[in-house]
Image 1: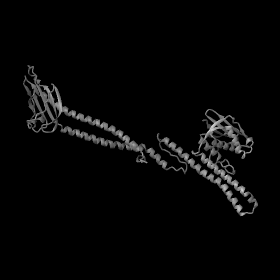
Image 2 (image 1 turned 90 degrees about the vertical axis):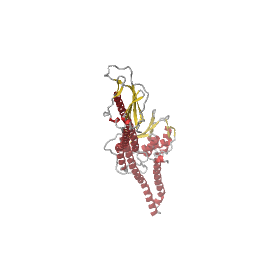
Image 3 (image 1 turned 45 degrees about the horizontal axis):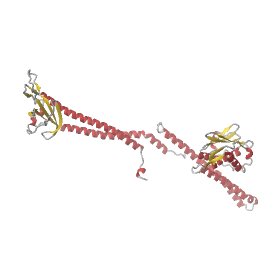
Image 4 (image 1 turned 120 degrees about the vertical axis):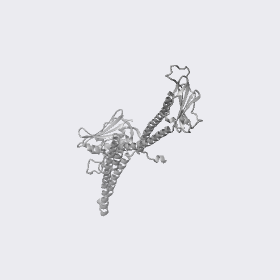
Length: 478
């Protein structure tokens, strides 16, 4: 057997893994969406900051009668004034450099990027700053605004280009922090989800564990037990009910087995004791002609009774086993009944006079002949033995489209109780509790019941009118 086949499967583990995986994927998707949204928002804020500064600087550029002026006040934007500042701007009039920030003083040969683009267009690009750091630059092409204080304006427009640059180190730091928080949140979320799912699944599987604990305490050899539950769980109740049925059946089987063992011992004990007594008497009085003349026949009779008991027990065991071979064939029912009558004549010489056979000669069925012969033989024999001698035994058969019902009825002294009607099919059960009759062992109807179960027949005993006991055998038509 492979290792995969040896590995046990766990409902708990599978539920925890699957639910954790699904929720973790959902959480990861949510966190990733939030992370990307926050990253985008932070970058948009950085770009918006560049745009706002550029717009402010553009408002400082004025066209005063074709004379371009840049009225910049360093005290309001000190980030461009210090020589060691990390932000820069550069202004072009046409293609000529018009103004540079003081922060570019240390980098005389460095120029911010200049791009050709339509008027009033802007573009943001990644750019390596003059100080060698990573940054971003915004390039905007615009027209210098006319001085509103001058009533006469020239028709000439002065085109300007502005480039401002700022480092992205702080931006990258913020993005890294956001990503780290995202990763940590995801990891903690996955472990948290697994912990919660494990707790929830364990709590949900508690009824199963409780059921298993109760099963461990069961003992079918003791008093009748069932699995009880303090609270009903919809999914567990069908299992508990079926287990209780199984337990009840097995307790009954165990009880029946104990009774059957005791009854078998009782049935065999009597003839064995008789054999021992006969042998002891024969040994003690070897010359007693009365003993020696009957000894052989007495031993033979006792042995035949023991053989009958053992044969019936073997037939009961065989009929209860699925290994018994069934050979279905077409049977003329009346011919089978006549054969049974011939077989029982030696036990019941008056059988032909007592048995009222009302079965039609044309009635046929398809069944296993040995099983049907054994069933009817036992039913008729039982009716002949227990039925009143002065009352006839009635044998009838009714055929319909789906099944055939064969009835054997005999009158009795008093009707059987409900408990007796059920118990008569138990092995070694006898209505005569004293067991004084050596010819009846209580196995016939048990054999009938077993053969009916094996063939798919049904047998039912009931009290009918006028103190009549009726056995109804129902056979499905094939």
